[in-house]
Image 1: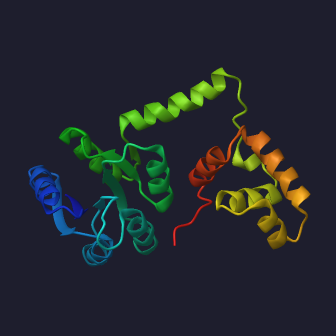
Image 2: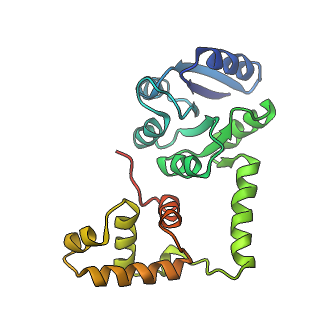
Length: 217
């Protein structure tokens, strides 16, 4: 039996999910919470196999922050984000925060159940259109001959500067922190972006998110 904790600020949504999941012979909802802090407390108490986590909860702790904190305290618990946000930025932030899966609220019931079962087995899960979109983006870069570099190809200094840039620091601020010249920072930035095949700051931030270089407080 797969034990599940529901964390969503809408009582109607929680009731519907509970009825749906408890009707399945292999699933059991063991608890529910209306916001992040309550979700963490319930998870620590119940230790469910899977936490079904909403992202947008205006009252109390949001889903991303709760996911990050929960993974630190219960690393073996799988978190499946269930959200209305069909957006790559939310997807990458959720994965970075520690989620093992990401699925939309308008997904068919069968897909949700399959995702929960997949996470309970220790696997990851992304909804099909997200997987297709990410693959399409990758293949499009290959098609146009763009250099798809790897993080491992960067020097230690380039990795360090990538992290600072992605967190929003200017070249001058980075130079002052690392006690190097602004010209040196600019040179490292140019080199690392060329190695990674990146052309803009948003692309760099997205790459940093994927590599876990940004941290939630």
